[in-house]
Image 1 (tube, one colour):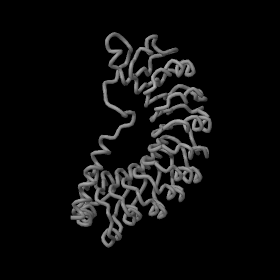
Image 2 (cartoon, helix red, strand yellow):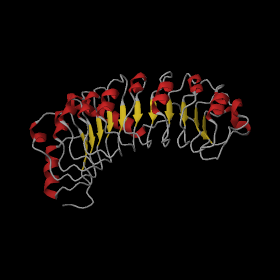
Image 3 (spheres, helix red, strand yellow):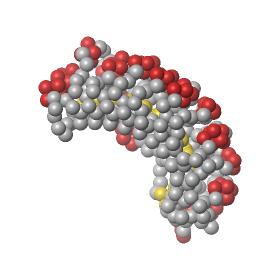
Image 4 (spheres, helix red, strand yellow):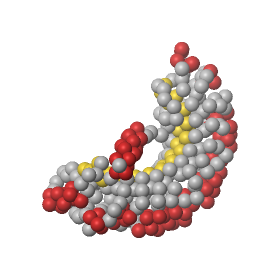
Length: 316
């Protein structure tokens, strides 16, 4: 009965992961222009890549704007833009990627319902000022991907409503940063993929509150035992690294349910997986360096897993 409950929970978890998408705080068609009768039906507006210097003249006429994407319009005056958007008090999602932003205007504070913001590809962004201004809002998701970050400032801890943080395509190896992130009480998901990590800082164990961890596309060959302290972690994405064996720490983690560790250099499954009891019930090991014999052994070890995959392009 206990296993059945675990598998039902894992099934729900997989569905949630598959359907998860940022910028979808509500569901409706995304419009690319503000014209005609559609103006009363617009909730989601994508004005990205339109070489804008200012917003459309009739944007104030939209009745219930919830999401706007202004990405890749580097000549847009953000102060004027925020002033004109101030009438949209229900705005929840703001996408400002690739705008060559240095400083977020103070007027962002007027968006009292803003929950999601993307600031990816803004490499000159003053992070301490940015986080200070965002800390006044109920921000739940921040995308800071590809901003040449090596660390985060201490005021990140003031974003107490933050649930999801995307730090992909940076170079964050600073141990203190992970200590700071451990102080965010609601942090649920963390992306540190594509960060050129050769090791994970031992301080990653401070992230005792997170459920989903993305460490794929790095240069990792080892995971520290300190991750045992991450007692709420459900899912780890560790594909496209340099692991040569399945890390033993996964067998010691108290609630870990699923591991994606495809496209590595894994040749063997350690003995601990034959002797230890663990909640792990989903394992994706596609495109590693297993022999056919080791695959058959692994199938016996993980017999009864809810999800188990060993698809191989080439066997060793």
